[in-house]
Image (tube, rainbow over all chains, first blue to last red; front, side, top):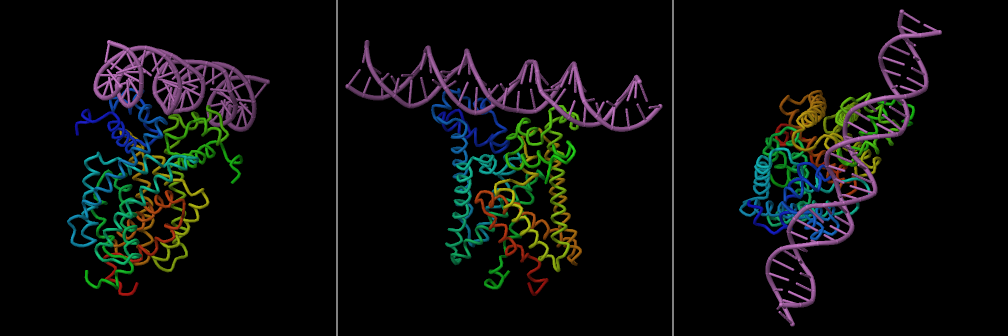
Amino acid sequence: MDKSALPTKDRLIRAAAQLFRSRGYHGVGLNDLLAEATAPKGSLYHHFPNGKADLALAAATWASDEMLRVIAASFAGAKTFEDGATTLCFKLAKLFDLTGQQDGCPVGSTLFEGPGNAEFLRHAERCYEGWIEEVQDHANRFGLQEADARRRAEHVFLLIQGGWQLARARKSSEVLRGLPELFAYAPQMASTTGKN
Amino acid sequence: MDKSALPTKDRLIRAAAQLFRSRGYHGVGLNDLLAEATAPKGSLYHHFPNGKADLALAAATWASDEMLRVIAASFAGAKTFEDGATTLCFKLAKLFDLTGQQDGCPVGSTLFEGPGNAEFLRHAERCYEGWIEEVQDHANRFGLQEADARRRAEHVFLLIQGGWQLARARKSSEVLRGLPELFAYAPQMASTTGKN
DNA sequence: ATAGGAGTAGACCGATTGGTCTATTGGTTG
DNA sequence: CAACCAATAGACCAATCGGTCTACTCCTAT
């Protein structure tokens, strides 16, 4: 947590990830950013020649990787796919509470900017696709068919994404904790898995 | 569609709604906004004494009301709750395509700003709650129990919200059109309603 | 006819924006 | 030691930001 112990580049990335998440790309000025990272302007443009945009991409990548780790950790000790997905929801709910209950999706808040920013959009897609694939891999691991696994993974992604948004508006992680009730059943599973 | 025929105040609101949706609150400058609305600065501050913030709230309200109308229209000729919800998804998919495939949620993009903006957050919650209640009313109309209706409505909201976000990243409305497969089944329905 | 107010028009303001540029530091090489 | 270079530091810049202010138009009510 002691950010001052980290190298400047990492401090910049972390500060950017945090600030963009809560105020959006355009809502954060370089001044706020540099103050938060306790770095001078020269360092920013040394490590990120293209300035703010470069930093945003790096921040999104970093945040996305963190999410991948959270997903992995959630499924690590899971007995079933639903078990892992449930743990993921609870982990995210806790994260939501810890970060002040009003931050947005780290990728979305950072990368969804106006038209003409094709690279930002492409990067956002890559990140999201990465999350879905990570979940899908675990679904596979639990024996789900390829197509099934894909659908289930996307389902979980959609609910979490929507749930996070609603949680933000309500300033409450309640919705996130209630998600497991919703993805416990999926169309093709209703007949496949007889129980529960 | 001929915006120049509308009174200035409405032109401002519509321009704001459109621009905020695609670039976010901080991503839009007053200059862009006034140019889009073909209105001078004096008019803005005449109709909205508190400037950009007031305008944003009005724009979100207007966009939210439009969404309520889309929901109502979707359920108007529906035979079942699923039927109406499905129509809603397809209507939104079409809307997503028509608006360039990269706009965000009109309420979220406009109102989710940094901390200290309690009013914006409260307003976002009101809008979202309004959408959910509108869907819930239709669920009730189709005979679902109060608690059931609420849960189903929230479920639809979450999937659409998440689906829209993913659609944006993918620049494709495909996800939105696939949502009906996901909310066709809900936990308590699996046993309550034998048939799907 | 005229007084008054709603609405339009845009010049203007200080603050802040993202970005550039030069100077300097400090560690690692020869 | 000297040379070099990654990294730090912050002064400085034009452009733009959101917002204020005055002037003017035009319609309405008396």
